[in-house]
Image (cartoon, helix red, strand yellow):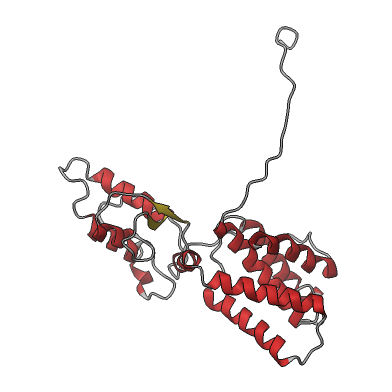
Length: 257
């Protein structure tokens, strides 16, 4: 057949895509953790993430980092704020000599950390463990409030991917009615309570009680009601001690500049 058909030459082009703000925030969250640890530990002893005794923690961090190139909600706002506060106090006390390069690196980590914790969308991603998106819609205000991640009636509405899917299923189940959106506000409140239980809610034992119109919700959750995190598949392959921290840090700080 190759004799009868002349195939065109194969051409391959690598195209780099710019990350969204949330993509950049996910990656830079890891960067500030690495920078703060490297500078405040003086890159020595067991407190240093790249110390041999911390290999398991380092491998887990790198594994999570690989999976965080999209939306990541593994770090709580409190954890980020604690890291930033420790970095600020470290610079204020001046108990340990710090090179100008390390001081600049730590101040940049503080700046990025403050930016991350002030981002409302990231906060809602973290609270609900959802992939958020703004959806333009013709819903009335009470429906938008019930189905939004931030309890707002704004349009476009901030919704999670799971909420969007459940809203579609609800309307599809109501197509036989004259008004398919009848009861949609109440259904949104029910889904928010039963399907997307926040971290600080004690209602996780209700997660299996779904409204009747939800036939098959395959969203995976942990025992605490959180959306399940990516599987932990760390590999012992990466990173030289002194080179590793700078390599990871320099990769990602540029994303928010």
